Image (tube, rainbow, N blue to C red; front, side, top):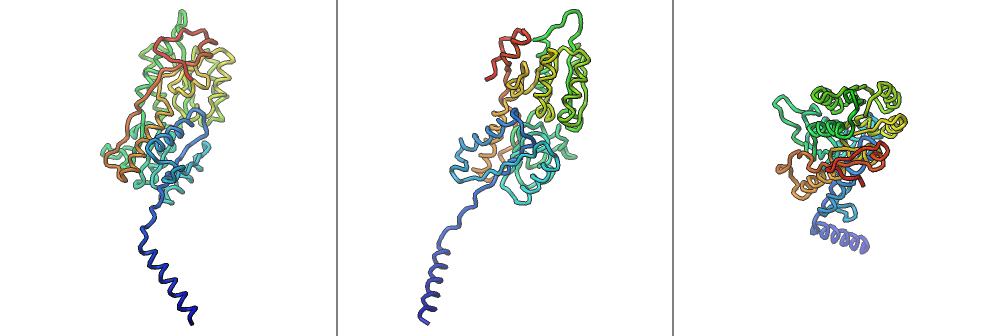
Length: 323
């Protein structure tokens, strides 16, 4: 009997003590969705995490949890990843590349989505009937204006004698951003008297065959547009172009590091960092009323020293060597 009374007394003390303790706050969880494994895109994730850390949020500090998932270029896997994060009610989503962002924004209206390496809501076809973007869209976005400069730069490097410049490109006809870029470049090429040859493809598995077909048209240069398929198959494209001495130009600084000659475009690390700063603000304030999608702030003109030397190109003074 004494043992029972003593046990009841201990339980009573435990209950009293637990009532006096403050509840432990749940650590915020970030679901990071990457569409594919790619050296050009990887710095976006690094920049995002670095921005959080600079603002005091890190897994080392045990005040956030980052669940990173990569779809490896597979759309069904991408949908599965996003659905799992949404069902688990993560505190916020971070999405890298257009397809990740579209998939997340189509599947939740309540979880904030901080996008990077993605275009505006209009280009992603996410504007509603009143012309408004999704209410949970945040982060850093890009329009296609910079592509004009990127494409126009080609003529500063290459000037064929006695004929118009011929530029080739491939584009993924299932990616809205890629199709929009191709349409924009077509209009621009007519203004610049550049002959553009653009061939469609559906996946990176087609890249080698389509690139080799493109090269039979005797192009002077290849333009690598912002396209997940181009990112994923760039080494294949580069090898084919280098074999017949066709230089590659692009709008993505990361592709210059991988062997393209030159680019004018967003710094991918800084793009991720910019989105991360917005996410950190949300984690600090617990509301998004002061946030909205921002245009990318940092763009660079860069060139690859080895590629420029291979093609004996004179580099304009406002370009810097990629590091």
